[in-house]
Amino acid sequence: MTEWMIYEQMAGPLGSARGDYQSAQVTAAILNVNRKRGKRALTVADLVFRWDRREPMSPQELYERIKQINTQLGGTDARTTPEPETD
Image (cartoon, rainbow, N blue to C red):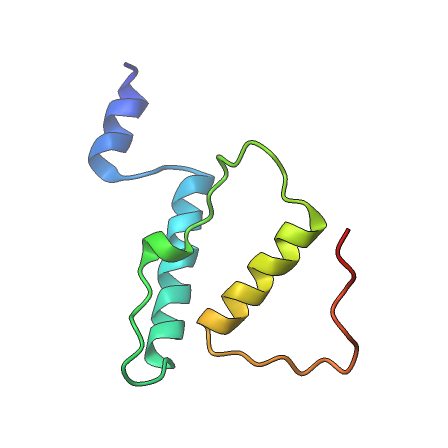
């Protein structure tokens, strides 16, 4: 194990990974102060980027995930066009 790996275990992630956690922390703070009463507070773990996904999502999987996130954040569907066709 190298010195920087040991330091990272003690001090937290370094480099761009640290930026991901910092961004998630700020995002969690903003979303949590604006959430509706009774809604579960989001954590940094809920919002930090996960770069370990092996296979890219299909367009339909991505669309379904976006709809799920929109619903979880209390969003509404304001589109005037129908949903995309599924293959």
